[in-house]
Image (cartoon, rainbow, N blue to C red; front, side):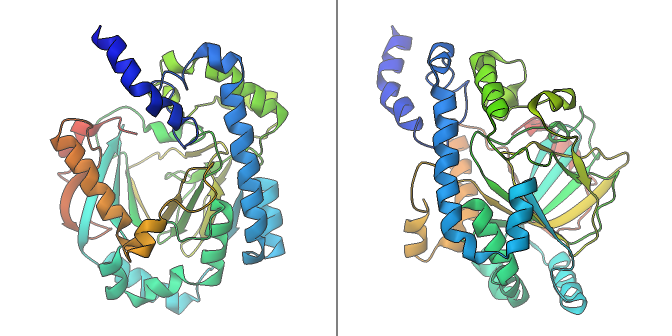
Length: 358
């Protein structure tokens, strides 16, 4: 009786989620319905989201150079070496790595991800950082790939590889983030070695080919009950051996020096490369995943209120509140004031409670 009443009350919400970025086959019985997906629900969402993103990108094409646009259309990612003049970069890196600010950490397998939100206070303290995110190459590429003419969410991110006892980092398995185009960018503040967690990407896998659409459709029929939790929540994993059947090449691993910018559409198959030793990678990390069916930016109200730079802190506080209400566990644990290059010593044990969080 209670289950039936819950379904009646939640059905309008589940219906609404069909027209949003919601992706979890496990949490929404409509998205996860084998019958509806056999009729084409998942494939319809894919086609519609990709079509709308292509139209938005076409309107923003003026923001990027022709070589960058061609590289992105071909590969699904763009690599820009020496984004900043060497002296400017060294000054920015020095100031960022010594900047103490409120940090959050999440454990996945044996790897800790630390994030420091780039908020209004940090931008006031570090005008060099404001200059970077207003720089045309950075601003144009991140907006074009995202398909929205607004600044993405931005963090100083530290990846602490192999610092905890646990299973391998799930981010080292090839996967797509979600069903629609989405943007992530990495501006590396440290050199990235090939065997220390380098970003990997399958060139061309950002395109919704007929083979990819059929593969997605087949996966959607069993995704709800998939043994892999992240796949059941809409971030499909793929074995490298399956790529040939989709007409795709092997992934490339981007071992790059500091002062390199990588911007990618993470509907394409990608992964964090494995690290053979304990290692640290520090970057400015940008992220943009909005409602693909909504024609305008979904953070317009925050922008109008002058709070656009506070998105990340506000989001963390919301997750904290949901956890206090026992509605949802917040995987991002408050770890106090830290610099981006602070060591992982003593943190692994405290992070174990959120192992495996998405």
